[in-house]
Length: 367
Image (cartoon, rainbow, N blue to C red; front, side, top):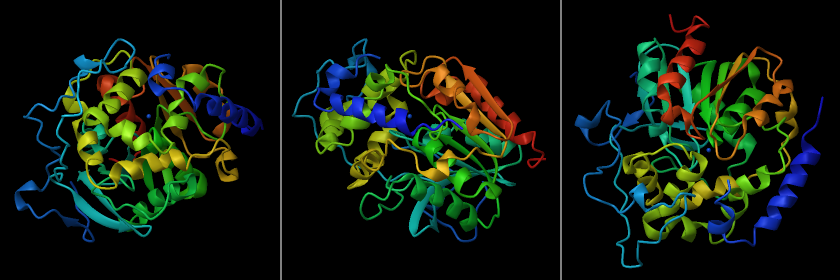
């Protein structure tokens, strides 16, 4: 079995050389059913709603302020008012792994956990969740640990094992012995970790935009494309992200998904979550806790059937990076490449959503 440790260490060394560069310069080159143990928000009319914060008032985050490389044109000023967090509607809560998780849920049937990445929220699955519910599943998309309204853990408890244990604990909290897991970006990382820690509890696995981290060997250009792994772990990362009403969120979307002309509403829930005290710092903790060397438990091939979805226009991960991780799966592994970038499930839901539903339903559990 090829070990990725040496290439990963080389990648980390090369990335470290980028740490002293200005991010704006290095980035341009080119992640309903209810449970008796859960509680809902105070608004009784909000039950079943997955609406995000009100976006009727302009917030200055229109992507027209981005240049062709995803960089800000700098039209905002320091006089912009500081954003105020608006509590989400329709959120339910459940305790798992010592934390409180807010989540959206739809449908009845076998449990499907939908794990989001950075910078994102459960709204990233607003197309997939109802489709899974219609197919006979109980689809749950939690706010990952540290993302308001989920609780913020003490310290940087965002390592691979902890994220995997969160997913496994959520399965137990919802009263199930096993579940399907779908993950994007850091959510995919958590999904790989959960499936590796306790394969018997993950019935089938779907990962989006992230190759198997225990078997990925980076190409030389990956170091430049992934420079955010360095600068988002630095002390000034929160100030960078918060500037100009979280304009860097839009910059990351534009760089990672260069063919997606997204509307401001797409990133509004993210900015709203990051406006809550402590939430942005916690989200950046995922980068501070990242290691260039995968833990041993992630270097064992996964036995469950797995569907990996990659965008052909991803600004960070190339299709070849996914193809070379085939050794990471002893079960049946399917790699689906479709048009779109890093947020391919949102850019191209017409292909991605049916593919995920069909893959999970073909197991027979949603019938």
